[in-house]
Length: 310
Image (cartoon, rainbow, N blue to C red; front, side, top):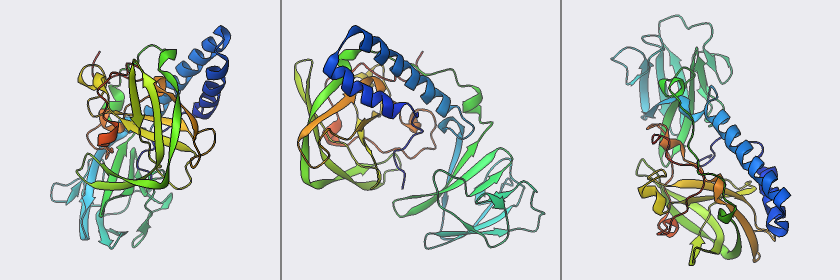
């Protein structure tokens, strides 16, 4: 289940590798290349956000109740969505399986179910990367959060996308690219993570990144999003959330420590790559919130600022 993944730019991996090299050499030439890499990463992040299925296109999140859920644009549907036929049909939830039951109206020719022409009785595949249903500009995804099933709806012509006015960033600052000490947790710690829906998530944390910043010792716990991850995800909030950065907190991703997760070592944290969660752009996302351990009193004025503040 992809809880944290937010359309990461392709350049992220190479930029993180270069960050390790720069931390060891620190030449002016490398500093210039690093800054160019940061700006490239930021441009690619904005490009991902503004894609036809980026987070700026998220327009609805509907709870699919057990049993029948009528769906269509008419007001008498339990799931009402513009741009659908008045009475498309219903979604039937049994356990965690959602099945499409089409109504009496003729299905539009461009109505796709799991990428193929829709048909009555088809099962909607739960996949956060690929839509279970697609019709005109709408892409509908089945997602699981805690013990509930939701229908996530994206619209390639969403108002939030049309009115997008660009991201706000702190200028790149090498002071906030940090080589932290990695302290493994053996066995990994199960962390209690809450999301904006008020649901509790249990996520695995393999250790702690510890470093000194502006005279203070900082300890941050990352989580693993999926078993096959090759990056760690840090959910954190700092003092800038009261003034210039997103109030709920930000995300930061980092390559695994130099000696792996289970051994002491070092890990590069580049806060110039800290970014806002989807909830900074839309009220229909299901973002996890920073755990208590990662709510910092010091300021980290680096990375992405609030979107709605000029």
